Image (cartoon, rainbow, N blue to C red; front, side):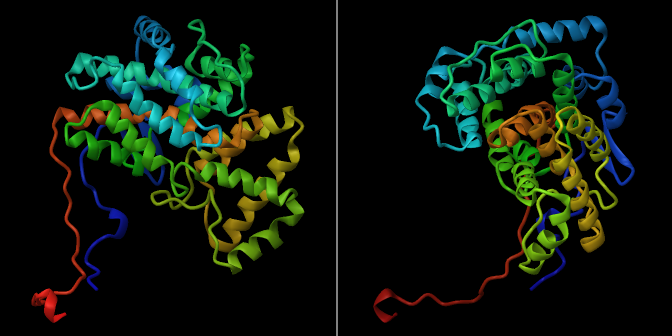
Length: 372
């Protein structure tokens, strides 16, 4: 078998982009370090940066927030659709379906010109959190909560999810997590969005392709699995035995390792500090101590660092969010990046069509059916 190709396109540079840079030293959005953005910015400001290649002025940010708030509300058809969804359906499957359905009620769905692209991007970024909250409430047999246009995107999501205005600290913690998840270059789901955009498909189809890729356990689903693992372990004292048993069975420990970062994910220190603070406030120190113990054991045993999914799942757990929607929250954050990449792909578009390495038979001669 030929070995002159790169399985999974590892280390292959397939296109140019000015949106995000990943190096062994860190992560930047449009030239701004992710640690600084997480500490000082807001998710809305980061979305503006990703879409417009510069940080917004106060006036521009206020206008963008007004645009978003004006699009929080879901079409009546979508809320009715949610009421007919099986409660046992996976939230990511429901989210994928409803994003596709949104396109049916958007007269500009097929318009890929600049102004229409902006308006559609605003609609998607604003409505996906409301959809995620509605999915979660439906799954728990709770009635739909209408959006509150006075709140930030993170705040409105928590309001629609819980039916009450969140406290400032909880809203800020979620907002910070959304910033960290907003963009990450050509990950599987973003690449899926760009491949779809390259065919000149509509924006909704591109985001559906991305969300479909995100649903997999090796991408967005890792945060839920990692947190479930911590709850199963239960105590830091149980970590060595648990990890040993899993590794002997050659099972994957979710939340560790990264295709790009070999010396550690730069988003982890921010999330780790948030989790430590939140665990102390919520009197949930045991699960944080277990997380630290697993991280240390994996570094010692496998030389693998924790990635963003490991601590984001823990952050969502400490925020009281249901495990079933962890990946949906990932999606509502990464939508900002998806939409930036879709727009960039369309600016100087070329159909993405790689080649494969053929490993099958050759030179066979067809025999008529009667002689076989």
